[in-house]
Figure 1 (cartoon, rainbow, N blue to C red):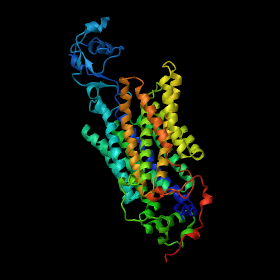
Figure 2 (figure 1 turned 90 degrees about the vertical axis):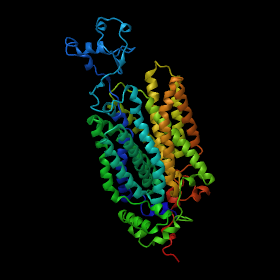
Figure 3 (figure 1 turned 180 degrees about the vertical axis):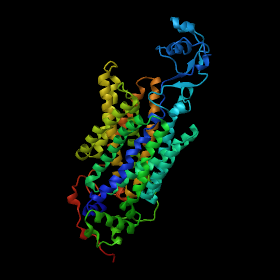
Figure 4 (figure 1 turned 45 degrees about the horizontal axis):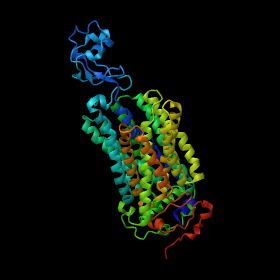
Length: 548
């Protein structure tokens, strides 16, 4: 008897599972609110030096605003006015078309900057003047946030495998709200950077625990549905973010607006059960029996589990030492676990690196930032719908490998396409972005199915760490275009291809039981791949009612 068989008997996707899924899917809508928030709160609007210091009340009296700018700010090579320099004295001869080369040498802005507020009322760049020589500080906020995500992946992965999914999820909810709201009231950039680090740290718990807890409560037939729909929530939340950012264009109210919905998640936490799989694997059969009984009652299968004593659940998962504490070292102690950790780490790094590399390098559509962001998010929806059908038809391994290899192919095609074929280049780039998102959708579900229950959160935490590393490196790869223009695309293409081939070395998990222990990974699986559920059902009478 395996846990999947018991789930089938009490309805592995009944009202109880749907309720759990809905409770866990609510906070997943808010994840892109914070993960992609830097696009809006750290945006640098058009700006120029404050030239009021040059005006003594009479100098500019008869000049239009455009003329004042011409005589006060040097022009760039393309004819546009500069953003970081000004003339120490008005250069009136420029009004008569005299070359800029005869003008007095420009100096850095002497009295701050004036910002265009037509798109953003306020951002951290305008709040603390993070422009010109300090613009790198503004860009660093995203890196700081993802550093928090990287560390959080390791910590939440370890603690949720040791203390359970449910308590760590509450910690993640509460700390996300606290640090998210605190960052909105930051009085300095240093305070903002620190609170954003801990916001990323806290949000990681929501990211990795909700998907694992959802998958652990459903039967084999519905794991694909749970994985893909959970991923769709990211894309929908991403589209909603564009609307929220458009309506609230001041960074402090925007941070509050995207954080407040998590308060509702804290309230709904009280109805979220602990993973029965985790409880059984850790010898907490009394609590597991309680939740399974509640599940059976909700699904109108109470008679199925009524006569099963909690001690009988020990037979479902063969745990040699339920008191053992598992750590990240257990990912590399045994041969097949080492192999699994190596290849999943490569795949996750490749998935994230190519996804963010493409996302940061795809040109816009000539639209404003809000509409462009909405379109980029909407593009992900068709890709994920296609993945839903492909996962059941082709299996996890071929979907994962195929999406990555095709992503690399799209990047390679664009390397050789002439610049004047920009319509076709844009189509290929958007197709590549869709394929890279398909690989992201697949890898979340695939990884959850590959790792055993006793190490599942550790495994997901480790692979998320690798993903955030790949996402952090992607912008640095794009900077290599200054060395050789095609170099970033060549690197991303190679990374995508290699990670796709690495995915081919992983085992298929479609229609197989979730592994419970390390022994399930190390030993030959008794359940073959692609066995229909009806063929693996074991009559409930096979479960012992009493312990002799």
